[in-house]
Length: 305
Image 1: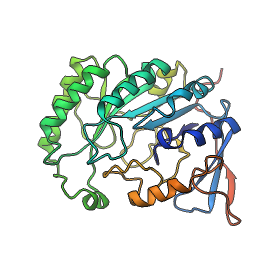
Image 2: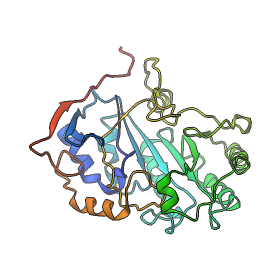
Image 3: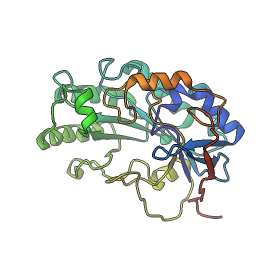
């Protein structure tokens, strides 16, 4: 099975101590977001976990300890660095700092284990098509040689986002085509593999792949391991990734990104962050008398030797 540490919150940045404690103790508990009293226990050992996947906007807190996990588990890291400033991503380091941290991470784990995520792409009067193209090229020039691939996606205008970022300019198909054409050309210029994520259209004419951003092929090549041929069910509609189990919790990321889908509000996330106990097997809170704990299904996807 694949353990995902960062789809619901930025665990690498804000919950490093908790994450290390979980791997040291060898298990983790996670609540079902739809049925909070249902808790699943996952064993965190190399025999039951094929790969540990990280997704973060700041690996600096985890970086000094990454060997502790890397030396026991296969890993893969998604590193999100975008064009946005504090007006959109209040808790995220600036571009310069993020690039330097990614380079250090690449040196520590190897470039084949890192994807640079430039997403979501959204448009405002400040973040124009021209600014995205200019910023993306400046970043691509510096990140080339330090990453396995680049992944981008266009923002989905769900209801909460329209409320949180009313200044967003709806993106037309022409806008997407211009952006994809330029991103594809820039990636080619700097020798980078580039692909979309989710249901973002077919831009193969620009050298852009449209496979899942977390497939067994990507993980396998990154870690030099072989997986069985399995259907990738994805994590949501239009997703082509291999299924994984997230050990985080919604409403716990203090980054405050205004486009975030995982928090109801920045205030609630901060309140939950302050309640966090790094010694609890749950990222948020502790077990209660009405909680029902069951063992998670942990089947290996690896080819048996």
